[in-house]
Length: 152
Image (tube, rainbow, N blue to C red):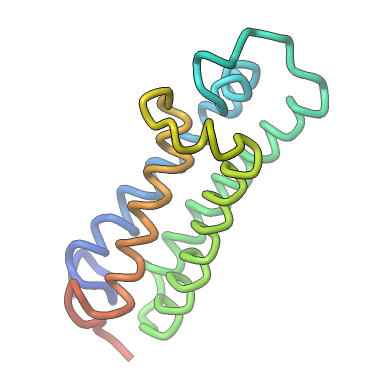
């Protein structure tokens, strides 16, 4: 088993190690400075600082909490399980979540801002670019592009 998982080498590295680390970094960003985390959800050009509401701060902390839960779920479903069926279902449902994440950004930003990539900041690249990258890799893993699953 590649890196102690049922996944082939590249997906194991990406989904068992790199993605949980990035989720923990996202948790840290949401918790350590929620005001900055909130204002960076849109391009620099349109993010004149306005103190976020208490509700927005609460949503930042909630999103940070979800990041930690997703990191734990990723480890559970890609490293701890020896059932390839569990890993496949996990990747399928998280791939759907990737699309929801990208669409949420699109709805909030609107098409003009969404398609203006040169205005993106690091948070927007994470929300959209990284989500798209992970989605493509999840689909590639599920269709066997990176090799076969191992295990039961």
